[in-house]
Image (tube, rainbow, N blue to C red; front, side, top):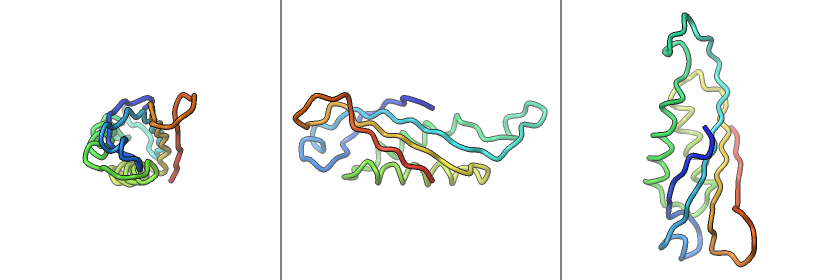
Length: 110
């Protein structure tokens, strides 16, 4: 799933906590499952990922996007034992930092 969009109040700076900012999230998984007879229950449904990510972002007002990424990785892996690895990229847009750039992005994999 790429470019999931959320508004959050995540950050170290007071302005980030008060005003918040927009996030973009990419989520990739490596799954050990073989679809059988074209049935969804024989593999992992990516439809369950978005609600989990949305809930974690809305309920956690952490300082670091790395902390947020770790929480999302753990929650996604806990959905199904067939999920072997999760890679997440989180981009913070419109940061209160002096300079010209598109965003700040981190990537974590576990």
